[in-house]
Image 1 (cartoon, one colour):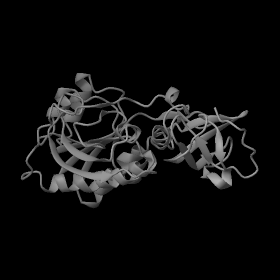
Image 2 (spheres, rainbow, N blue to C red):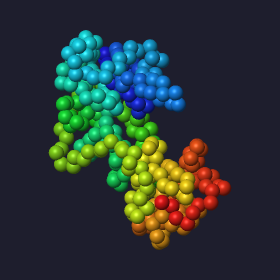
Image 3 (cartoon, rainbow, N blue to C red):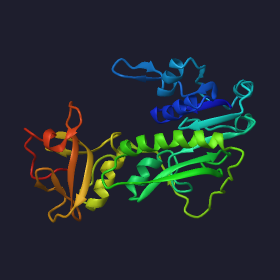
Image 4 (cartoon, rainbow, N blue to C red):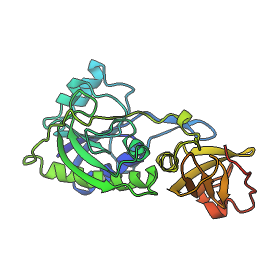
Amino acid sequence: MRVVFMGTPEFSVVALNALVRADHEIVCVYTQPPRPAGRGKKPRPSAVQARAEDLGIEVRHPVSLKSAEAQAEFAALGADIAVVVAYGLILPQPVLDAPTRGCLNIHASLLPRWRGAAPIQRAIMEGDNETGVCIMRMEAGLDTGPVLLREATPIGATDTASDLHDRLARMGGRLVVEALREIDTLRPETQSDAGVTYAAKIDKAEARIDWSRTAAHVARHVNALSPFPGAWCMAGEERLKILRAVSGPGDAAPGAVIGPATIACGGGAVELLEIQREGKKPMQAEAALRGLSLPETLN
């Protein structure tokens, strides 16, 4: 098929690569404009732009698709279908209508649960037993369209957002290729109005650990925010990022250090598995804490 691909972060690159391997013609890639990054704050292209340029594919990064000119340029591509994954712009109706076979979205949740911006993190944070990927036919509402394919995967006790991100990206790439291959025989499944939840964008203000919560909550909070923005606490004057944790038994005041890397919570305790100290790389907790004298209480 003639495909317009619309995506921005590394999660999207996996699907782009899968479509190229399946010999679809990627007529154009749409992505977010380059953003200032690094110490010099020089504009850096998105992961999708970098990969598309490596592949010799035309790249466009409009700041909006609302203008008649932008919509006409999109329609002029004569695409059979558009594949959208973590693009970052709302698609107006004329854009949704332009490809002859419509627009498909790769969404990293089991819709209608976790519509919105941060489905991977929210699924972990709320203690879901599983998550997955849906290939959805797009319509004007936020992640409301009918689902063509879905596949689930369990969420393990120590799975982080990074772990699920990579697993779901591979799943999404495989499923969207299947969806395009079977497009004429798939039966769209209308999403139920029951069980709808919204995955609000992650705010850095959420990242500080509250040891007064239960151990299960704290461990999920840590794992959901790993690697970015990274849940954190203070160990005396040093800020520690906690990147992986697991809950278990324990009985002491919230924040009390009750083992080499075990911290009491409002109920139970968490074992810290991966830590990043200030100015250092992420490390296994035992190695990261070597040479650091933890205070009696973290806060």
